[in-house]
Image 1 (cartoon, rainbow, N blue to C red):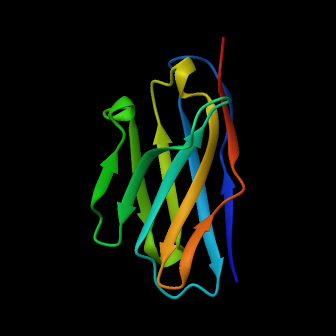
Image 2 (cartoon, rainbow, N blue to C red):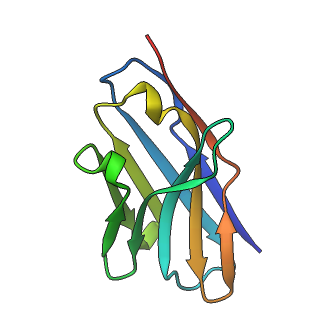
Length: 115
């Protein structure tokens, strides 16, 4: 059993910043990759950023230069630093962990960008 606990979402004004965290716990002994996805109403879930065990990062074009993904392997935690937020970044953000035993998703955390 693997649990993912996300935190850090909330309401922020355009141009502001938020930092999301996702901690994985349970029967997880190694992780291939950790990442963040988002879904807004009426749209498909999309990749925001992902980071592999070798620290290779991939970003959606729309967030490059504004968002930074990082991970703490000792804590099985992945972070998403979001700067210069725009209204179009508003969505439910989901953490994803890919491990040898499976593919796990968090429950989602709401990010609202509004003045």
